[in-house]
Length: 521
Image (cartoon, rainbow, N blue to C red; front, side):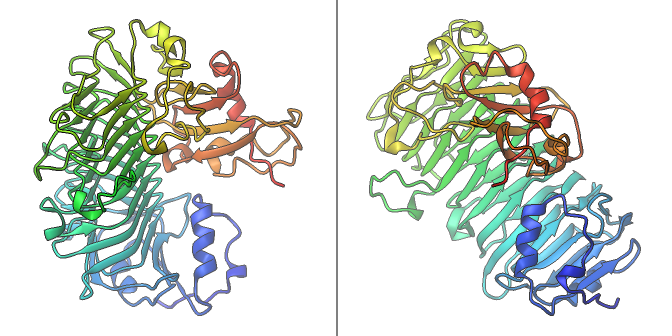
């Protein structure tokens, strides 16, 4: 397959659906980098194995029926890219050749973008990351893909002896997997392998663990990651599992964290709790959770004992029935532990669901609702905008770890709202309903007159910048999250409105979001 050497200015004008990431990658490519296009039925693995740093292999529409296992690396700033030739007609990788993983990559600096992995019911993984002779895997990005109907894990970064750094998993859809959606690290911790840094952001992960086990995201012992703005539901055991790793950070009392779990929409799980935290240093803040049979948040000593320290549960909103909204076991031994400013609705036992840990645990600002209508704008519609006792009850949280809310708006503490949403934010949601994905938009107030001009109507579905109209006023919409499944124009919505009266105007915001756009200076 001959490479197509094209200057960047000569490439097709149609923008990738993942424009921001794609533009950054293009800017970094070496001048001599090549594009290789492989039609369905071609040997895409052989073409990929012949690439150099900065090259791209673009897969044509249709089904590619072979898997690939190779040892190869791009370079820092010049990754090797495997992507769709036409982002609007994504190719499908569905091996029939017995490949255990659809793509098994030994090396670093890889970008995989805009592909559909699966079905591959007999397979072990969609993308498996393995270390080369350096013992490291660095700079791997999985963006805007679909990983569906796989027999095992979606993304697997679990190889013994490996150090994983800068692993990015953004805007993917993972569904109907035999194992976990994203598995990071090794069960025995750093003695086997470790993830030094990872970002798992804005993914839809559902129906994982169909073989019996497998969380939406598994962050195993001694591994670090930022897990944020994901929608995860219908997995057994837990939707997010965090094991912690105290040895990886100094015990300096400064509130350092290794794992961050924030602004996620979790639940319900098929069993267990929505979020399970086995250890610290872990910050869990601004999440909205619907609990399972073991409740919403469960923190307990895990397979690697002695990790229950430097865990901060701050500003979460938890709905539960059956298991307690928050369960803390072993938290009475002291240490740097906090449960503050959480809003709880224990629907089967109104007014309950909050634990009373002893020792030196920092507790305060938490509210358990006596009636749903007293706390939220519309519980039945999952509009969890704060009301009643939730407004004005938040205290100053430990280490200033609650400086903003789920929508990214600054919190004024003490006195802000309790739970994931601050007093000036409103939540619109169909995210808890099966088949209804959730998107997060955060409009901020603007001083200009409302103008709505042309060219912005498709911004919510078709691009992170929210359209390109020229109107001079209206809302300055910062689209925090427009994942791949939203761009496919599936139904559902999860939005944040801001400003006084936002809960009352929640219904109007849905239509307004379609017309809003980011103002350009």
